[in-house]
Image (cartoon, rainbow, N blue to C red; front, side, top):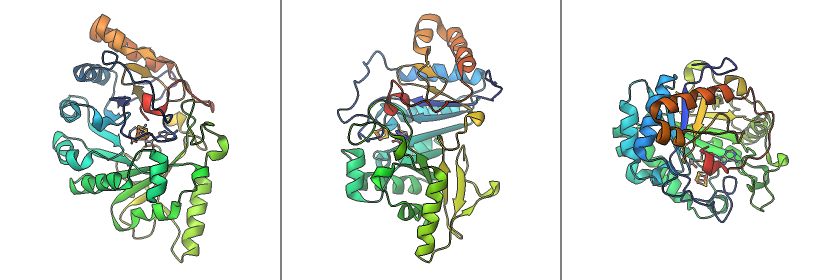
Length: 334
Ligand code: SAM
Ligand code: SF4
């Protein structure tokens, strides 16, 4: 189905929980966020009911996210139910990977088709600083588990924040020897108190993708390596979405750049978001929400259908460089 601006909307990101085993500096405040009450969170069968209605307005792909989706009880069964649902052609997940060693093969068997794992650095101390409570081995083991379970593609999402001075070339090299698809994401102004020193998001912290590409290529050439080459459609990893992809010649994986700020893809936006407490968000950057939980609990599936139609109508044409949202990323579902 099309939204009020003629875009086909076929992709729903579902946040399963606002809880997380990390406290990433760009995603939530150090103290964590006020957790949603048990009754506020959608039950697994409510998520299924909402997804079923969503297929009726044309949703075909679903991505499970959070908070950390793998800490949600019943996630494997939910993947299986969504995978079996008529109309849904693709169920994917974004995770910090910590629980993948114990869950990857069950998720694969349940029909999860793709997994994106978030990792911003290969430096153990920097990883601990960024996640505040995490250990790099846990996410690295999660990546191994995803590859071993046969997920393909396995994408690695890295948020770039200028003041962190991450080693981008070392990170991009992850794509060379193994089929890993590294994607650099511009730091987005979501939530009020992102930022390691509590000062919040700052425009100077954003590294525009064009600049990052140049930094990586300059360093590669200085090391005697070839530069990244742009990829044509055929070689792009499945579900390439809004990223622009490159590869080092002969590499098994790719390097992508996602530029929500410097090259925003609003005109191609195909998504809606469902928060863990059952609010439909037409746009990541807008605080307008439609209460689909109340619609389901009070009005049933027809009311949910109407809530989706309202969300389609409310999708803005673009995010107009809005800075800050009432919810943090972990509460929206990044
Ligand atoms: N816990 C899971 C994870 O980290 O992959 C899923 C939820 S997390 C909110 C989803 C994605 O949003 C992660 O890749 C994370 O790096 C990204 N993210 C969080 N805050 C962000 C921000 N301010 N700007 C850009 N990306 C952000
Ligand atoms: Fe948790 Fe993911 Fe947010 Fe990090 S980015 S705090 S892992 S939800």
